[in-house]
Image (cartoon, rainbow, N blue to C red; front, top):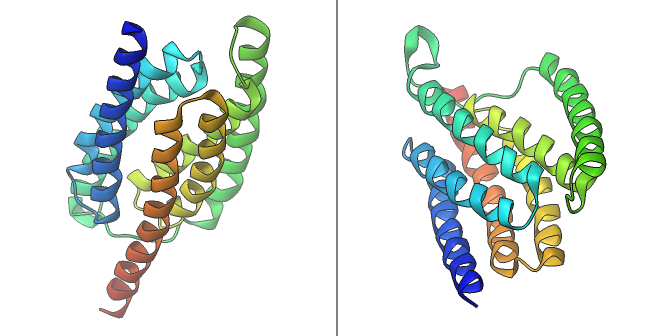
Length: 195
């Protein structure tokens, strides 16, 4: 019972900090990166408890990418200025596709063969998409939200299946926020192109 209460408390904290993070990201607010670091730390512990090892590893990378994103948003533009929203260059799509397939197959295989991971290939595929989407967000590529929409949809189902009902609801809310983020960033991109 104590473990259940601790897990639910942690899950509640993870939900709250993740919602703050994504809401701030949709608004292109730099403090979203701080909350990304906090929520990633909390969810790293939760995923370890539920044997979702790819997702646990993802949280460590998210912390690193959050530091990178924080820097990029402040100084990644021309002449070390604030980074604007842009479309992802076509040349990166092929590389991202190769990375997605390689990561999914390698991580899924390793976790299915050498650990007691639950849903190793699904978890690994969602981890790969999330890594790519987070890197795209750090670079302020508009299409990051499209990947997040797809990932959030499937994460909702996976967490529901695993009995993480609060986190499943969180990913349903993140799906809605990702749709809003796409619309808001697209508008800001259009405004910047009109200038």
